[in-house]
Amino acid sequence: MRTIRPWLIAGMLTVTTISADAAPVIYTNEAAYIEALSTGGFGTLHEDFEDDVVWADSRSTISNPASTPQVNSQGILWTSNFATNNIATKNVGVSGSFGFYSSPHGDPDVETSDFVCDVDDPIPEQCFLHDGFVGDSADTLYGVGGWINGTFGADVTLFLDGVEVGFGADGNISSWTFLGVIDTDGFNSFEFREIDGKGEQVITIRADNVTFGVVPDADGDGVVDERDNCINAPNGPLILDAGGNSQLDTDSDGYGNLCDGDLNNDGKTNTLDLNLYKLAHRTNVGDANYNVDADFNGDGMINTLDLNIYKILHRKPPGPSCCGSF
Image 1 (cartoon, rainbow, N blue to C red):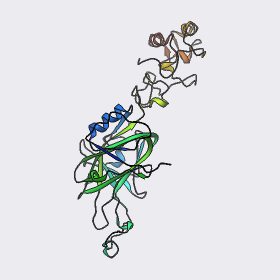
Image 2 (cartoon, rainbow, N blue to C red; image 1 turned 45 degrees about the vertical axis):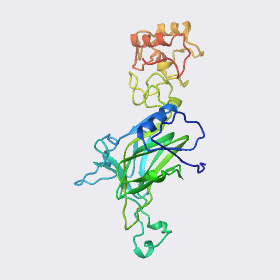
Image 3 (tube, rainbow, N blue to C red; image 1 turned 120 degrees about the vertical axis):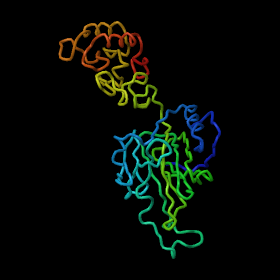
Image 4 (cartoon, helix red, strand yellow; image 1 turned 180 degrees about the vertical axis):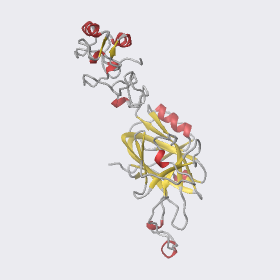
């Protein structure tokens, strides 16, 4: 259970260290935010809403309005902050072709009666539109920051795992503005919410170019290092091995074939494994001596390509951190 902690404004400053259990740090400068993620040892994941395959159902134009309940892009599930609303992308972005927003905007049941809402503070909660959007991730996130724009001078806040972090005065925007936060405790959901608009005074927001802080993915194959069975040899969904496989591990030891030369599973890669490889060299799937564990690149053939991989693996401990790119 998260607890509410003070937020800090980093603004234009570059943060050189990010310690565990620190309070969330707010950024209004994209370059400083990205530099702080890098300095803190985090990787980045970028969403620009431009992938026409992933975002196809959300594409909306004046002549062809469209929306969809949700989109799962790069492990982030994007939805409106109201369950009955959809989301859409349209040519309203800060760059590229598309920006992202809730469709319709805000609470569909917002109170619009002047009798109820045209009162001195406190204004009843049901009078606020609260336009916004939500992202959920199965993997822990450590930062979220993007370009946000609002109509009529929006007041934007941020929730992480349901707890408000807030941008203070920097959340008062009337043009495209970068708003972000790094939280080294980690979080799995975020919500950008506009908090000033009311039923009779509609204020909406939209987003573009969102960058997330994530656990590093050293080989860029789409599997973060903490779950990658070969950290330094690409074999994930973004960079498949030569056989078109993702995370191929034919002996199910937790080590991907591309970084596992331990063919007899004794915890070492030595002459015994080399002899096993020699027996399988120049064989194909179906041949008597074909050894699927020696087919390091998973293409169904054990040939010079696999021999070159084995040369790199020989006399090195098997496992995810072995042994460089192939």
